[in-house]
Image (cartoon, rainbow, N blue to C red; front, side, top):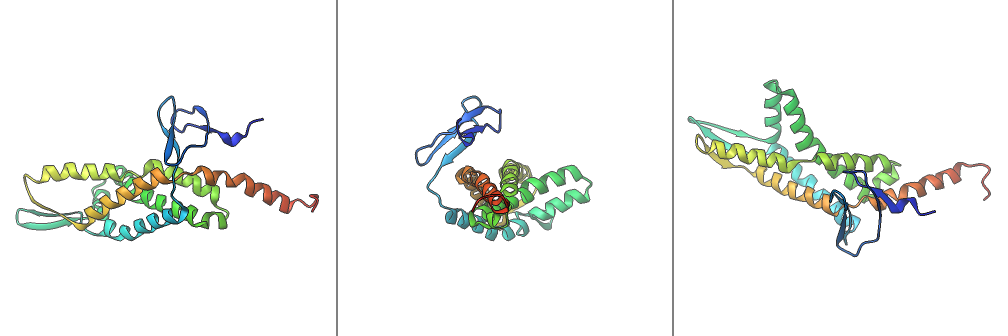
Length: 214
């Protein structure tokens, strides 16, 4: 019988694919839909931790620093990420505000926390390896900082004709955080972490089975 861990399922089209060992710095795609499946990179867990810590350091500036400074009809104003979400809630746009909050704040932060917990070993120490991997899989599909930045740039081009617009430091931090999240999505391979789960469960069963021979 073949090793079940050598067969993976494409997350996009559910095609069963045999997992093969790749050369260093190569990645595999689904032959049917070309979805990225996994890669093999020279990054160590300590380097992933460094990237996630950098992301945490960028978060205060991204969330609280102004993205734009506006001067319209003699009135100065600024806008940051959280203020924009609160304004949407205040105007009754609950669905849009919730979607922006999830895709631009909660999912990117959750992705950083999940990869940090996996790379640092905290998830394994707290016996939360499987739930953390599942959470990271959800966050990686919903972290859409690039969509938010594109929509922000579209609004910026529309405002240029009617207002004096200056870019804020929060926009720079947001752009760097977007590139950092994209780098993490490319470099992070969950397969080695999934492979540890059956071994952990087997060892726990041996430890708790009173009829098992020493």
